[in-house]
Image (tube, rainbow, N blue to C red; front, side, top):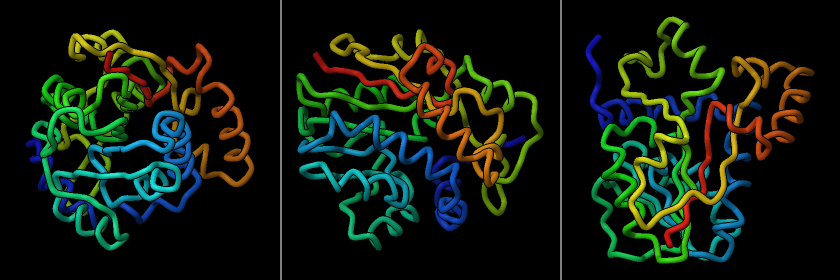
Length: 237
């Protein structure tokens, strides 16, 4: 099946993006991501790469000194501007900022869909100050979510797009390390959605609360290494 260009997909997806965001599963993802990023963003200058409509960025603003965002999709950027967020249209492979601009760079739900991953991480490192951090999320090759993705049929992710038309990469921690510039090192790893085979577990009335409690408890344990989403904290040395 023909793959769609990311920018066309996300422009279409902008209108769909928030339709499911109020449900427990998506709130669990956003809350987990922000909690993992907070120690590195507190009172810091932060860049979010792939800010989308600004849902995570709005939370980051609550404790960061200042937050800037970029997104490749003009449709997404327009939605973020409706939230009065400082988001510009730009590519992750060519960030429009000088070297060493930010204390922390974060990116969630985005990097797995960028084919030029080494160039993207080099750009993230370039705009991070020495001693600063990058809090980056990848899709985990060694996870139940990866297995389910491989076995299930394609499903709609926008009005005219199925998930198999969108570039998606699943990485191991070893893969992630191989993408990093020489002056970067992995400092911390956590996993999100480690045990639940589908998102339906989170949205069920009683099961959802139990699933969420268990998942939160194991995010930073060895079981976190099998999380469907790997959040990797990287220090620029």
